Length: 323
Ligand code: UFG
Image (spheres, rainbow, N blue to C red):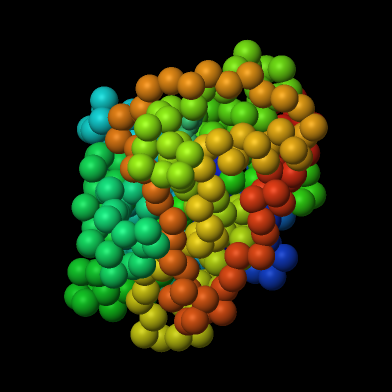
């Protein structure tokens, strides 16, 4: 059985939906940012905190857990600067409790959701896992601290793990049943689509003076279904390879500027956006584009969905729930 912590969140719920096809799954989520309706009905659902040892003990006593996938985290960069305590408590301390309880119960396979934010402001066009990690906000630091913990746990306690450093996850499941549902929403693609649905009066472009061809920030958008497939492959590797420890970027390898994303949203939806050009958002690197060659070579993973696919699937989702 696989324990998915944070399985009611955006990315976790997409992984659960794929995972339940082949494996029994138990989801632990406190529903602080996730939603019960996103969790596939075939999974067992436990409402609780990952930092609560008693809840974890109950799960490990009751279910034969082979591996843990950990998606539960606070993930807003701006909020992490204003409230670092929340980030170190929920993202670092709670994860330590989870790992400690796993070690106690002999559960030694772990998949961890990390982020491109561990690289800070990279000085290369294409980021490989060998690039220096130098996060510039508490969110990125909280994720990197867990990466360090995992490495030390692997040496000392024989933990096997795969860290996946996500670039910009976007899009929705092809069934139209689940998708991105953040409150508040801060991500570019859902904000544009909500505007095009008439739910917001405009889309703001944060900064037009970056050192990029059109002056707006470039990001690597990865379809949430491609990202989910990376987790399934990582799990298979962990379950079959006794010695596995790895850190992989997961991105498309293609960079799109904010303006290009807005253009594509207009094309896909056939609607025209009202754009407000405004000042930079603090802490935004000009360009974040991944090399995912390592995961391609070692796990056979490849992103197969384009920016157009991402936006089309997200549009179906937002239009169906009108938000
Ligand atoms: N943007 C706008 N207007 C908006 C929202 C976003 O112009 O209304 C721009 C941002 O400035 C950025 C790009 O669109 O240049 C993408 O922004 P998102 O907020 O969608 O995503 P980020 O790249 O900021 O964030 C993602 C993840 C974070 C992670 C970060 C790593 O969502 O969890 O990458 O840098 F920390």
